[in-house]
Amino acid sequence: MLGKLIKYDLIYASKVFLLIHGIYLLICVALRILIMDRLDFDARPEVFMTPVTLITVLMIFVLSAVTLATSLLIALRFYRNLFGREGYLSWTLPASPSEHLLAKFLSGFLLAAVDITIIATGIVIIVTGPNVAEAYRQIASEMTEILGVSLGAYSLKLFFFTVLFSFTSVIQIYFCVALGQLFQGHRVLFAIAFYFLTGFVVEILSTLLLLVSGLLTEQMTFSTSAFNLGQYTEKLYLITGMLSVILAAGEYIAAQYIMKKKINLI
Image 1 (cartoon, rainbow, N blue to C red):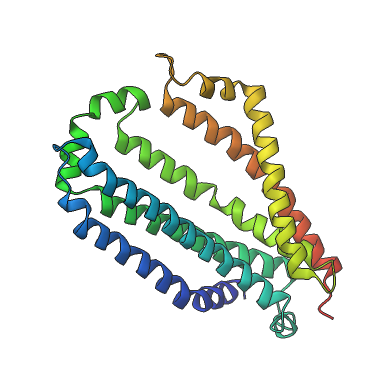
Image 2 (cartoon, helix red, strand yellow):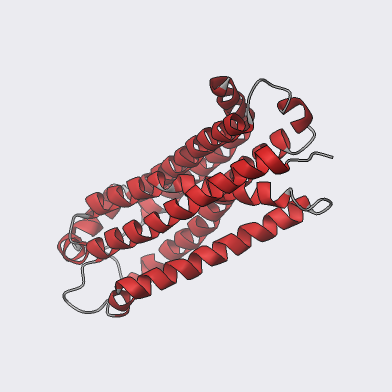
């Protein structure tokens, strides 16, 4: 039954998910062909900085939209399938609340991981043109000194860390949706409020951990010659990652308890 639940979740999400990310990849290809491949990085900085800035701003907007769309897709599937009208049918299936939550977690994590992978692919498409590679070769040694490793190794490490800990955002979504069900009449509103509240709490706890560990001090002294951005980022991900895992474990247990003991579709 667990496998069937995951299969149905992925089938439900596949059309919208593929459409959103297909459009994203088309945008990246268009930016590469129409703008990035035409830039001359040997020209004066003011000549190519305007289009580079334009691409950067556009990509921030597009990446935010794609990430938000994926999160909404995961949240809506969880809410509609278990707490909306579909919930009356879903809870008649021979599956326990724990199985339903585990299925949603696994399918949500898979979507989040694929989302990150496709986003990374789009970025690679944009920045791997011959002209960009040649421009980077001129500053490669300085970047390696700052990062402590090559840019490729640094980017790969960030990618794996991001994919690895993406499950925490999925659990946070499910926890907030489940928690919102305790407030009849305003379930969606409270779920959204709890999502922003938990995000704020995580930021506060992360900042406190950075203060205690001394990493915040290192960040403030970024200009010192002894500072290694690669090592700093690795420590940052480990500390915030451990915090996220601990919080995610608590949120998962709480969501499971709510689904077992407090669920009420009336």
